[in-house]
Length: 567
Image 1 (cartoon, rainbow, N blue to C red):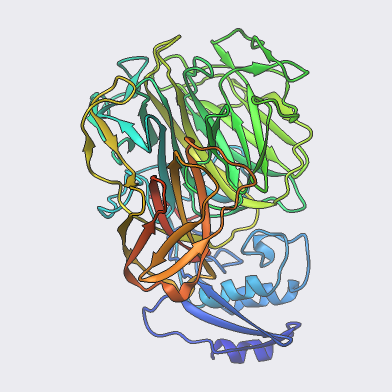
Image 2 (image 1 turned 90 degrees about the horizontal axis):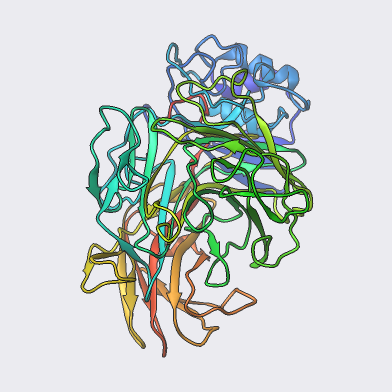
């Protein structure tokens, strides 16, 4: 009996009729076409095979097969709220509706059993979770290092003489000027250049930054949106936070409403602001009034939240840069001080308030009865103007040898995840970093790795985006990149995709020449093709450097079960 016939035999309330369901052997995805009222909704659902019991999407009773029993479960709860997996809520939004029926239909007849689902401490029902079990061999064009670049994006940005220069080579697994951070088999201090500055070994993610006496940022994000509409959502991660302060190296967290690369600010000299966003810096502490303060367990041996920023329509409210965003310091956590130690973080996110929790540094497996969560800060007046975005874990640096010894520093990360509804992932296609090494020195440091593309005045540069795929599954597209200029702003962005010319007006309500910036430009999917694509950037009477260039196919990755191991 086909799925259509099954639907007709079950008493499922319908807003419209299913039609156009098809399944050719071994072809993924299935295409569901749903007619609701007078609106055609096209829902492309990627089928993701899994070996984990109760992790196969659509398998409501967790017996390892998606069949009529699961459809009956869903039908009996259709239209209800406050439901869970066993009642047919397969995208974890609390509702049993047409989305869950689409998921079940896309996985109809699939089987699976055994295996181990990823676990992120602090999340009882993750929408996304990565334990970084194994490195991924990515295409040569990828900037994601050992991270699975289908799931993760990585961007790097540096403030230097002009454009996006990156000191190198850097010593991977160097901590505090040479001390190795991880045990065997990752016990070799190795000189690396991007993208190999992002490494997975021993079941953990490691990134290294050598700031070359400047300001640098390395940013990593999962391409699956985090949704906290009408609720308090939770993001979790572990990091070896050994920060020596905000004039050193520190971990940083962001949520941005668009997947724009390297969202980051540094005083007035660096304004890579997303359209809308939230950033939290873990480099020190504040008191109950939001003023910089010695941490409750001492500084720098303990760390809380030293500052935060919100962004609304490109306008910042930065507690570190004369904004009125209030970071109320409550406590601190003992910093990681020896190789292998980690701090566990949990961030509760709602539109109006942010609460930050962490643990003292621990070794081995987290045990919250031994190292309990400490409520280190609250942001009571966040007033975010968005409820869905991408999360970022970042490595920030500011001339870290000036007062300490963290110019070369490795942060270790693990167990990155968040809760909420399971939403379709984006697919992102990288332009490779510019492979040229500059001649001379930047900030007294040589050689320097030029990861951006410099475009002279009244000139143009064409780059290639290889291997774009799943175009028909995208709900929209973005062209994203970082840029740096030293001209009189504002100016319009002139670009062409596969020869289709466009001009995009300056979107920022401010100007700030000689500052790194980030931008996402909506594009027409009709300009893009599967396979190789070209992007041409053109300038007027100004010079500009572009870097971390991507074509993003929104939602083209489909819904993927959070119980499927990523690596």
